[in-house]
Length: 586
Image 1 (cartoon, rainbow, N blue to C red):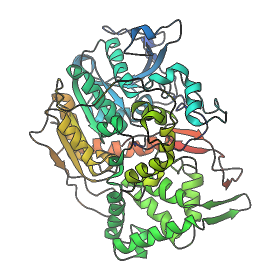
Image 2 (image 1 turned 60 degrees about the vertical axis):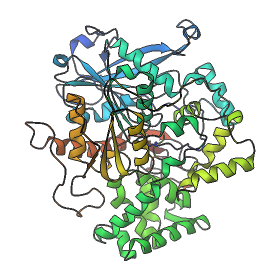
Image 3 (image 1 turned 180 degrees about the vertical axis):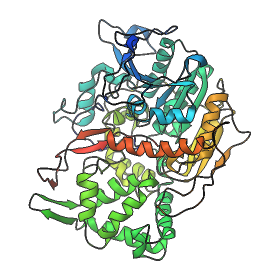
């Protein structure tokens, strides 16, 4: 917030209006009944074996399907198959080994964004997610309308016009563009649920996925049986405010946490600690050195074929801010920042701007992981946008945006997005309004870290207040989502909630496992608050740590090809396109 992330940031405009996330390829097993298509008892979806790429488990397979849904879920007269007024939703599923005996309950997933691909998430993290919820459930990924492998969508190369961005979006997407929003996706989830023959919604959403979960639970409380939201978006600001100042209210706290943990770890684990004795001194040195790049970018010469510049935004917004999401990357960040502060930018340049699939965006994109223009289109279609609903003059826009972004050192990264928001040309078509006092079929389980750079704890507390009987599990630590610092305690609550409907009597604060993920070799014996489930001596630990590690591997593997840094001259043996990882909100 797609991550990221999340992840509630707008990207500066690049290329086309509405980029797909790239088609995801999935493995199937060799089950004979899927070769020609199979309809399970009680369902109407036709499942086939997914295209064969890589094994997930020897005895498990991914199965793929799709579903045509109305273009406008709330107006039956504005739909049709013959006139193409529909969306084709891409779906995949990893079946649980014991799911059939448990009633074939499907847990819907959303990784964040907006624009994150849930089908990619099932492929990349399915076994690890199963280790948390158990094999009694199927894991179901669907790419919401306009996202990932669902259609219609527009490729990066489709739109090359010089028209301003909002008009380009409107023309490129046509009428479909008006109905790509979160309330439509929430209704879409019921279309899928009905096709599965499943009465109750089981859902697990991360970052932006928490907005989708809250929206669904508010619109369809009677079907909301198990709703888990982790890294919570303030749906009231998202839908009803031109600005979203609450999103980054804790970003500074996470940054200072990075410095504090570095000093505590010492220079053997954190090279930056060699440069200062206190976090205050380190903060001053780091900020002043990086700020100096505004006036004089650092030049890098590797050889005659690889030269470039390291600029302020490359370091501050595209690398430091993004690293606040994932404390597991802090030691790596410190190792490249330390020589940069001493005047040598080569290590930073090579690691974060040339070689790494997790590297920062170029000057045209800021934030976490790029979900393409779906991120922009969905957010602007959801909320307050367009000339009639925005500040009318340039001076008024500057005043409003300054007030919203001055609560953090990283706020200026949002500015270009607000300019697009003011001129947005696609009409607002949904009537959803968030509300409080929502009584769902079973109360929600809400999770958050203590200090999250984009979905702060205060937003989780607001959701806790809005949904009657819900419970909040806070993991004491830094980073985006509760799993930024793996916690047996949090894993235990998620598993028991899905399996038994269990909710603690009161809100809970969980300790992260030790050693902490911030800097290696700093920490000690695990302090988690319990293992997962009976008969499992270390199920919770395995679930939490494996998920944390697997999500890191996954984001380095599932990458999208994006335009190159225009200010880098590449070596012929180095890829000339930037790899940007699909956002996973962990």
